[in-house]
Amino acid sequence: MAAQFLTESTALGALGGLIGTALGVAVVVAVAAARDWTAVLQPWATLPAPAAGALVGLLAGVYPAVRAARTDPLTALRGAR
Image (cartoon, rainbow, N blue to C red):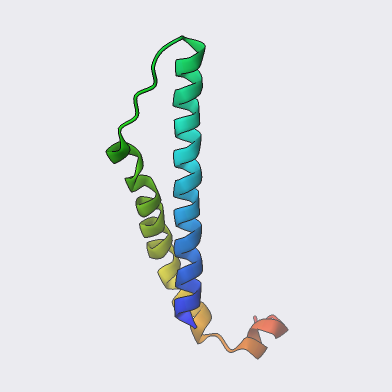
């Protein structure tokens, strides 16, 4: 069960990295177009962002995943104190 939670947190981190990369590229292209510049983007500078996001999501999800996997579903549904 912990693997499912870790997969979800890793996927969310990777998605955040992809969205951040897309926004960053869009800003660079927009500024370059507004100033009549040529946008030059190196792939090596943009590709690691989703991987870094996935790593952060994985690391941030370890403790909650382990804790959620140990929690009894009925106890969680009842709102244990």
